[in-house]
Each structure stands twice: as C-alpha cells, then as structure tokens.
Image (cartoon, rainbow, N blue to C red):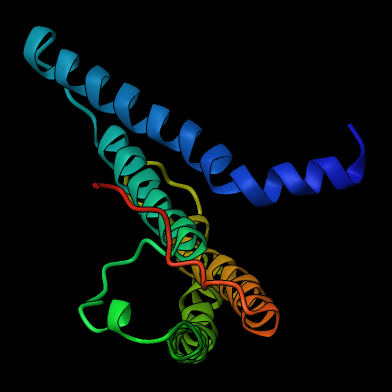
Length: 173
C-alpha cells in the first residue's frame, strides 16, 4: 500500500477506524460489568470509567465524521428552494462560522488538558492521568477543523466548476 493510498483510506474511513475499537471496548466493558454485578455480586469503578471515557471519545470523533458527511442536524427547509450557487455559498458561510467556533473551542479546550498535566490529576478508578481523557475535546475539535477545511475546499471547487453542492448523505429516504 502506497502512502497516497493509505492517506486516501485514512481520509475516507479514519473516524470509523478510531471508533470501532472504542465501541467494542464500551460493549465488552458494559457486558462484563453487568455479568459481574448480577452473577458475581461484584462491581468495580474502573469499568464505568472506561465505558464513559470511550463513549466521550466516540462522540467527539463522531462529530468530525458528521462534518465530513454533512450529517449534523440542521434546518434546511429553505435550502432546496435556493439556486445551486446560493445554496453553495450558504453552506460555505455555515462552514466558516463553524470553523471559527471550532478554532475558538480548540484553543479553550487545551487549558484543562494542560492544567491536568501540570497538576498531575488522575482518574478515580483507573488512577491514570486525566489528561488522556480530557484530550478527547481538543482532538475532536482538531479533527473537526480538518474536516471543515476539506468541506470548504470541496464546496469552493463545486462552486467554481458549477457542480451541485454536496448536501450530505441522507440517512432516511
């Protein structure tokens, strides 16, 4: 596999590759904990933490995937009524506003991570640095920034070429 092929696969399926092991971890951990509580009358705090923190990572990585597929919830009653050029410009405007918000949030989300590293805070059950789990937020916003730039590049390319704007993949049609 060449580097170009690898990067193409990473671009197309990167979020899936990241979330699949996390989903598996959540399911196995919750299943194990339910089994232990009901059949062994024993539970532990670490399993709840693993499931919770894995789910947090899934949510932030999923936000990036939703930007790539333009699958975030939006009210688009008027969009089909607009001509293609106006619709494309509206999508670009939305992406610019979201990019500004994501950059600001990325900046501010780094502070808790750096504070956790500085003060050496650890999780209650796992006793590992809380910075690993707080890093889900800046990671998610970083991935969102990358996907927003890709989305705007695609939209500008469509606008210049006169192609219809990518409106996202429909879940239910």
